[in-house]
Image (cartoon, rainbow, N blue to C red; front, side):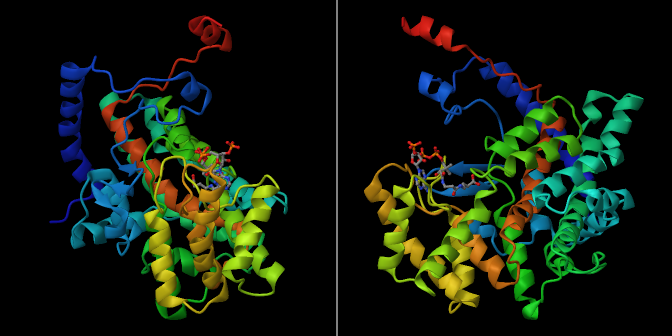
Length: 426
Ligand code: CMX
């Protein structure tokens, strides 16, 4: 008989706890990182100071989820990816069906959430709406209730998983509702009893299915954005807040607030804008020479070219490559996609010539917008909400594992500029 996700984790967790205890006992004093003054002043870039087992990002390979490069997983369902993130293995067909059923059983959005969202100013950013909705749903937290009743530390992961299911079961419905409310698309659409998570999100947004192509695009989008190891702003924020035993609603809402920053998730609302600006300036899909001129104009005015560069990656982001392959298959003649593809041949050379960006190659955000635009989502400021629905999987799987392993409260040591000066003799 197929096992539930909770049963699977229940079998796995004792082994993980034992492994952690052995590593700490045998190698607790082994050094794994050193910190330079530049790193202390520079966002701790490259400092190895936390554990994340769900995925790793290799500078020369990109995202690897539980040992599998993301390109190998691009045709999977998001629900399979969540299972993989948590357990290290893909679910069997029966396990997947059972998990999807459970997720749907957690799918009811409390009515007060819609009231909260409707009471927000019409000008609120959709990310502020999503974060507020998730935070408001804290009222549903199983973790908080169990904690208040008193539970053993070894049980923390169980209500954390329950809260994760509540958030994942509802976040796509809430996000779709925000889209319809904010952009006056008509009534909120109820979740379906049959469709999978990604397809249902696309349906609840009200997008035309285009013979299932829109659903395939959405599943791909949700798979590709699901996780990006532990140190990025949203994952790290979620982890830090969760480490204080704030429940998953607090922690995920906090992580999403980080995703709403323009150097992180919000960059995707700027990427397509830059592409459309070139099209507007040159009256249609621009030539390579015109793109080159516009790229220099952007750089010379002191701005960055959105969608290019990365804090960790040093190659073309495989997630960009996956979007690009999808575009070539389904929308090769779309002028916006054509422009994105042409930008890809031009901008890395321009950035290399400028010589500032450590990585001149495209990141995931350079590729996603053209697809979303093609399938009918034309409101750029909504793009980070789509990213959030997906990234909730990464944040939640990391939270559950950290609660299971009893990861300590985060508390790195800060030092003062005076202390740095005293250490360097200046
Ligand atoms: N266009 C122009 N200049 C760029 C650049 C780009 N796309 N990417 C980096 N640079 C510049 C930086 O601004 C920096 O300039 P200064 O020295 O004047 O400050 C210099 O190159 C070195 O930066 P870096 O070490 O290569 O990059 P960082 O790790 O500091 O920053 C990132 C990474 C993503 C913030 C940066 O590449 C950028 O701003 N890209 C454009 C925005 C973007 O696409 N963000 C989405 C990232 C994906 C995500 O995290 O979700």
